Image (tube, rainbow, N blue to C red):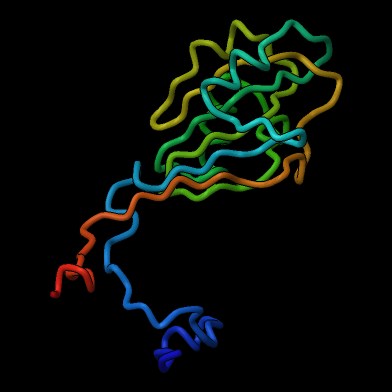
Length: 165
């Protein structure tokens, strides 16, 4: 294993698993190059397909929704939604924070709002899809984890040993 560069050591990288040279590339060249999707307990990945799976009538004061946000910080998205719907920001709950410079799919709950009011919400990088009413809000940690889709651009390649002759 080769020498670990100083910057890498400063952020906690002590060794590399391989001596193979890297492939270069640029991360997050565009916002769409980094996608984060929540994985709910039970394994369901939050995306547009989940809307069909989770959509049902339900019962309760908390409307669970899929929030899709692009290049918007989570707290700013909550602020925009609260303002648009005329509810207090603390009536909107999320299971976790997501990266701002990304397209993120996450479940949120909004207290005291009917699904019809949410269907029209599309504000500067934030879109809501109503799912169901529940007696319980979304709480921090109500997920298994996150699924990341990362696009690496501008890779460089070197000839393989087979091509070198």
